[in-house]
Image (cartoon, rainbow, N blue to C red; front, side):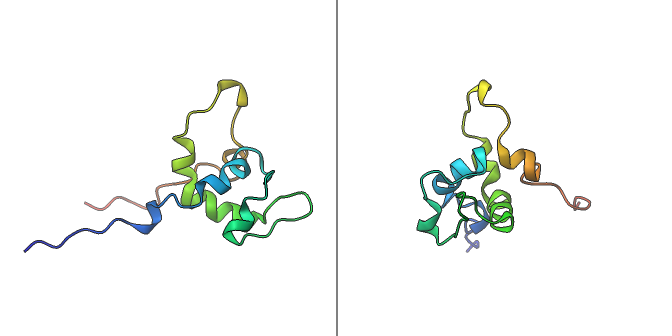
Length: 92
């Protein structure tokens, strides 16, 4: 019997709704990150480490969401670059 493949946990988009405004602007305007247990400073900004790790995990799903052309480039894309980068050589 063939082995059943499991969905990768890295591709989960849980938490994208809470991180949406942070990825767009760098601020958590509606204090939604508190639901995930992420602390923000007095200006409603999470730590750069938390934001970057969330961007690496959820950035591809965020970039698939249609945006108005006048909104410009998202804050997280400017700050951290593309969410996924190929590392090393491809296996053959």
